[in-house]
Image 1 (spheres, rainbow over the protein chains, first blue to last red):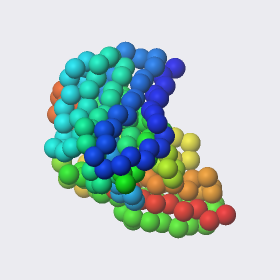
Image 2 (cartoon, each protein chain N blue to C red):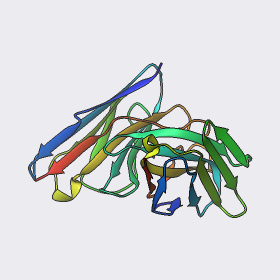
Image 3 (cartoon, each protein chain N blue to C red):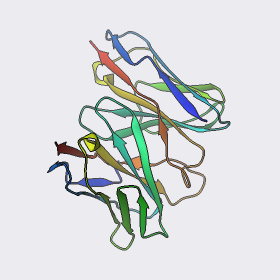
Image 4 (cartoon, rainbow over the protein chains, first blue to last red):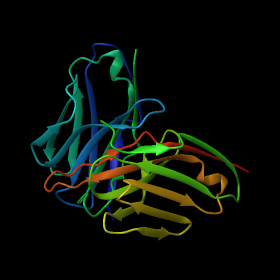
Length: 113
Length: 113
């Protein structure tokens, strides 16, 4: 069966520090991968998605970047965090969003101080 | 931008009652999905309904879709305290080769024991 792992679960980082959040999927190949951010009490904002290795699409210009070095690995990064980067970050995958729902990771609560 | 908009934003009911949440969207869709999110957790996919379907059931869940009105509803029958969560609708695009869904801001459901 397919599983998705996302870590860390919580993170407190100072302003200006770098960020690296990792997401891996098991039990499938060539998944579509997504990074979402959820502000407190709000909906999900799509940040990046990837349909293949090295293929990254950015939805919102910002202080973050994403990479997909391997088929089932998706990394969210920042060189210098801003206070506004605080939020709940969710990784998700789907085989085909036309026919299947998304499977989400458990999320990372990032607080920039 | 947010495609789906859930209504109401918050709902409080007694255990055993039915809960109905609505979702409206703006552009044509391939499918519409409903998700549940428990506090501080990732989203869980509940049900996907395609644009050519009008109704779908899964256990105590019933989803309807009216593409002429660009709206959907999620009915949870015989609610339980464990149904307390936020519920999100998400719309899948009606354009090929561009696989992402857009989430609404959610309905926060509280089921009182």
